[in-house]
Amino acid sequence: MNMNASSNALQERRVALVTGAASGIGASVCRYLASIGVHIAAADQNAEGLEALRAQLNPDVQFLGAVIDVRDEAAQQEFVARVEKSLGAITDVVPCAGLARSAPAEDMTAEQWDLVLDINLRGTFLTCKAAANVMLPRRRGSIVCIASITAKGGQPGRANYAASKWGLVGLVKSLASEWGNRGIRVNAVAPNGVDTPMLNVGVPEHFRDDVMLDRTPLGRFARPEEIAQTIGFLLSDAASYVTGSILEVDGGLTSGFLTHRHGTDYALHGRS
Ligand SMILES: NC(=O)c1ccc[n+]([C@@H]2O[C@H](COP(=O)([O-])OP(=O)(O)OC[C@H]3O[C@@H](n4cnc5c(N)ncnc54)[C@H](O)[C@@H]3O)[C@@H](O)[C@H]2O)c1
Image (cartoon, rainbow, N blue to C red):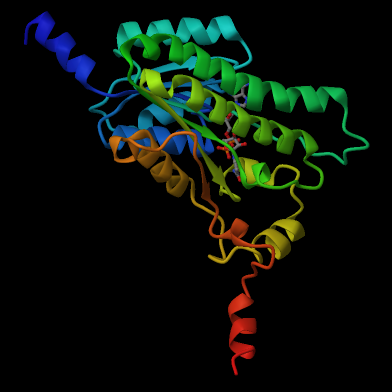
């Protein structure tokens, strides 16, 4: 294959930029997209996790990893430039880097507030901005951010996290409005609990199991692959008319105030 043919082939392939790629949902998104032939550009603060991820990917796709703090705008811009040079045009973007720091609101420190807002919201904005600057001129690209059921209501002990996810919804809807007529779709998924390391950060076991699970009609938390596949759908041309949407992937948790795993027992009991 001559150089032109090979660079054309590279251009036709999808290239996904994923942050928070070393763990949980981000790693699962990388594995899923690689399995359908998408090249992977993975960023995270965790170098070991990135190395472990590389070994799990479909060997037929190209991989570029970078140890980056998503709060660093210059590092994100530099990574985008490096990805475009080595893997080709970025087509898909999934900013997954995020964390939770829980505390009663009256005790929450300004540092805990800033850390969560800076990574979950500002970091996501910087990823979208850096990628959009190369995708907008080509009028092609799809971005899926990670909101949460905490972007649908509040959660005790997580004022900072909830604010970051409500902010993210405003960000997604604004970017969708601003970039839609220039070929870029922007959506988000809003998961309930997902079985990743984050699920155990600052969420007491009894609250997780007795309250969250009990109110989840499907009766279990999500596997990261289930979130990754929904993200895969929103990224793909199968969702070509979907933008500005916040798609619940929550096992039914936000279906109603009275949602309850035992609801069917009550419904059957009330049958006359
Ligand atoms: N797990 C859940 O129950 C759940 C539910 C709803 C939403 N989410 C959201 O999904 C996203 C991914 O979470 P997860 O469950 O996969 O968590 P995770 O802890 O498994 O993975 C998060 C990744 O982000 C990376 N990261 C954190 N700060 C970073 C920074 N400043 N720069 C670069 N990388 C950084 C971490 O190193 C880690 O690899 C987060 O935005 C989270 O809020 C998670």
